[in-house]
Image 1 (cartoon, rainbow, N blue to C red):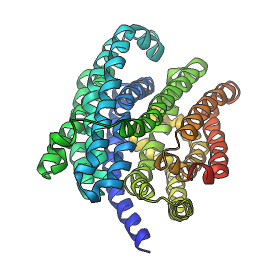
Image 2 (cartoon, rainbow, N blue to C red):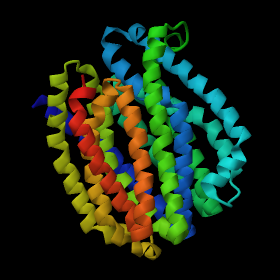
Image 3 (spheres, rainbow, N blue to C red):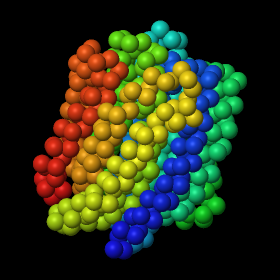
Image 4 (cartoon, rainbow, N blue to C red):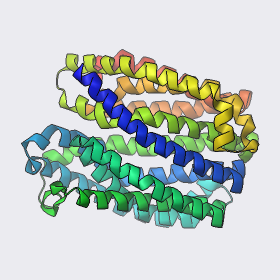
Length: 421
């Protein structure tokens, strides 16, 4: 019962922060809808996915690895956590240097692949050099998460949202579509600055340089390396598969209809953040602290029973309020998006169900299971999208999404005992 209360408490805290982010997202979407239209929203989606890939690669060692090893070792003091923290920093620097060189050399080609004939090489170059700033945000968030300092984490997030919102609105109103692209970069900088300031305000002793820089052992480097590989796989597979799917959609029905689908996907992202944030702040560190396979399985299905009714209720509310949400968040130009919700929301429910069961892959460091499943199911999503879009148009993307997560749910449920061992 204590676990349930704590999970509900964290969910409520994350829910309040998510509400702020949803409100911010709705306002930004509305401004983009007015000043850039559906095609501008689709272009922004491409830019966000590309920035997510850059940030995800550089931040790969600073996410789940830091959460897990901080959660496991912090009770014995920060000195015990230090080898894992140092290893994460070394990995991050080691990834940024070669990546930045590759991006600079092939920025024109990457721009063409991502944006077609739109000359946006500047976004590629700025994006990669802002990635280390974004990584600082991930580092601080992960340590606070691992220490279970949930309130500090939520307060920092709540402060950054309105500041980023004001900046984003100004840039979009003043510069239109280009301003939306500027805002993708500016938001990363703002959230990182707020997180750094918050860490100092909270007198975080773990920020001392001696804990982050110094000698490391091969044991920690190798252990963090497994999480780096998993994070890199996610950082590349998800954004790239979404970009490929969006390009498939543009090729068949054009940028305007791609923007309609992007609107629905954006709404899904926003309301599901209530759940995913609660899972990352409570569920992940809790599972990380468990060692026994049977304990992990019990915990998984306990949280499953609590979470899934909430997800189904949220999805139902979104469906029945979809026209109002579109009207508030976007504009009359997005009315066609209303027909795309039903299948997308079914996919959302299947997505969270599968994620709940798949979490032990991360907490147990099941690298082979995680990497292979990410690659296979990301690729399958693209293949299914290609097949479905040619037959069903934009609705085909949602059908591919739902089918893909249904298959993934079957896969993780069938193999839970293997990757949680």
